[in-house]
Image 1 (cartoon, rainbow, N blue to C red):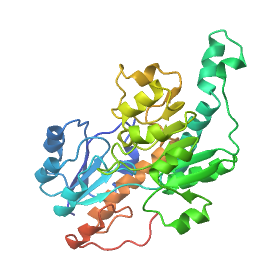
Image 2 (image 1 turned 120 degrees about the vertical axis):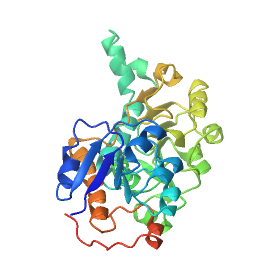
Image 3 (image 1 turned 60 degrees about the horizontal axis):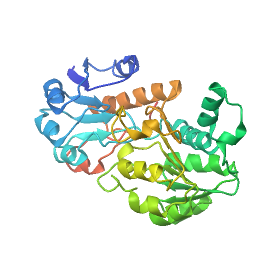
Length: 334
C-alpha cells in the first residue's frame, strides 16, 4: 500500500484527532507543524503528498518547492492564503469547506449588529461602572423599517438576510455574481456598492478576499454613508480599508463598527479601534461552535482523503486543474 505524507502547516485547535480519524483508513504519515513563514512551510512540506492549511502562506514560492503534492486543503471558506493559480499550473488540487458555519457566521454578524444598534456593550460597561441611566445610550433607533445592506450574497449572507427580515429589516445587497432571480426569491434588491452605502442603515460584509475585493470599501463609500451607519465585518479584514474605517469613525461619518476580523490578526495593541467605545471587536470567532469546528476539521481532512484515494474532492476550488489531473468523480459522501 502506498504511503503518504500529510502535513498540517499550522492550526489553532486543541486537537487534530478528527483529521487523523478521517485519514486513518489510508497509509499516512501525519505531521502537525506550526509554520509562520514561507521557508518554514517549504522545510516541512517539500516532500508532502498533501497539505492541510490554516493561516500559513502557501505562496507561489512554496508551491514551486513542492515535489509531489497532490492537494492543498484549507480550513474554512476563504483561500486567500493559497496561490490558487500557481497550484493549478502545477496540477495541485485546492480544496476548502464552503458549508460548515453558515448559521454560526450569520448569527455572529447579527449579534454584532444588534449589540451595536442597541448599545449593549456600552450600556453594560456603564452599569458596571456604577451608572444606571438609559440616557447614556442615546440615540438608539428602532430596527423595524430600517435597511440592512449586504456586501456579498452567498450562503452566509442569504442566511443572515432571512434572520434580519424577521426583525422587520429591509434587505438590499451588492453582489455582481448573483443572478437577480436569486435575489428576488429572497426579497432582496440588488444595488451597486455606492448605492448600498447611500441607502443602508446597517451593512454586513461577506465578500471573500481577492485582489479585486481588497480595500473595496474605503473613503469613497464612507463619504456616501449615513452618519447612523453601523458596519459589520465577519468576512476578511482587508476587504475594508482599515485606515479609511478609522477615519470615518473618528470623524463621525459613521456611527459604529462590529469587527470579527481585522487587517492584521491578532489586532495590534496600538490600533485606534481598540480605544473606540462604538467599536465591538471579537477575535475571528464567528465561524466557531463545537459543532462547526468538528465539521470543519473532518471535511477538510476528507478533501485530502478523497484525492489520495483517487477522487476529486467535494469542495474543489480550482476546477481548471482537471486539465492536468485525471481523477474519478465521487458521488456519495458520508
